[in-house]
Length: 161
Image 1 (tube, rainbow, N blue to C red):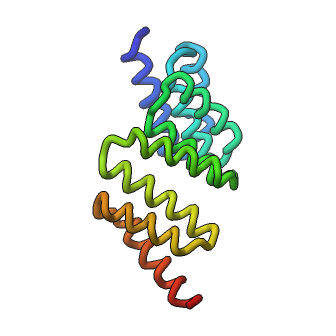
Image 2 (image 1 turned 180 degrees about the horizontal axis):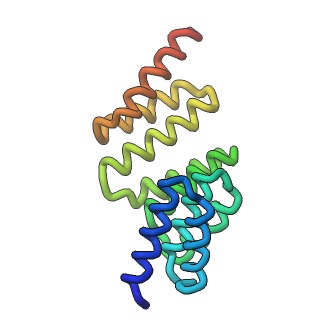
């Protein structure tokens, strides 16, 4: 397998995605899927591209395929959880965030995951649980988004109490 070729293809597709040129990024990654069908990277990156472009069902099928090809990958679990959350499947999102926590290898990764879990609880108006997870995120790392979310949830809790 030509990993340098695959890496170049992935980088080209990511650049297109960052430019919000999703169709070109999609074309590049669909070509990569044909050329490297047994590698998780085209599936994962195309799944992320579909999340960014709002095509969540397509994203989920690709991310689940990436998980089969590379189990126990924190990034795959985190993106899959996010996609489930955006689809309204909060239980599946929690399941995948728990999987991501099980293999997260840095405080930053854990902080992001805890913050995302807190955001789900916030959306469900479960403010005490949201607060708990935003605090967990901050205990892992000084994560600005978690601090902002904690201020927000405290404000909501003050209003309703």
